[in-house]
Image (cartoon, rainbow, N blue to C red; front, side, top):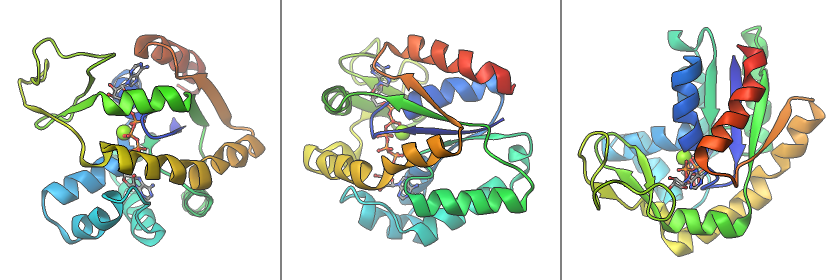
Length: 216
Ligand code: AP5
Ligand code: MG
């Protein structure tokens, strides 16, 4: 099963992707997570990506596409994958189509999480991430049992650098101008499936599972 999760920043892509990964046994590939991992390890990729991420801008396509290209060639992607946060503009979508064509593969579905701008801003203001295992929480919607501590591993929770209000506004603008056109791009290919992402996370997940069953 080859799936793309599409949606605005804060729409719940990461939250849903970690459940889908477990249920459907396909690797969750998040370009944002790959960049953050590189930043934390002080790699050259991390240094380059940081310049753009901290301003809420897209990392250049040349770097992003090459990272995804080599990740998709890894063995665990043979039976499928779940892309989260890629593609993020038409050029990346076209590059992905070409790469898959070369491999004799194609996308099964693009799941678009529909969430209003007001909800997005609320969710991003309350997001907290575990510094050890990366689990995502929300002070309004998905609270940890103990303040500032991860339920799963006991790690310390932190606020993502790019969740500051001024950076969030840039990210939302980038989404509107560069990523939103992908909805029509994939509609045109007949593989777009929209899900109401405004519901509680377990309900969103239930809806996604129902539509993905047929690709199992
Ligand atoms: P990335 O890490 O991909 O960030 P994003 O797309 O901006 O999305 P987020 O991770 O912020 O949100 P999400 O949709 O995963 O929501 P989440 O599940 O966390 O990218 C970061 C940066 O890297 C980009 O800005 C760019 O600079 C760079 N980058 C990445 N990919 C790139 C690419 N392809 N090309 C170029 N540059 C790239 O949920 C959000 C919050 O809401 C959480 O607190 C969560 O607990 C809560 N929540 C989730 N679902 C629900 C629900 N149903 N109800 C209530 N609360 C919920
Ligand atoms: Mg995410």
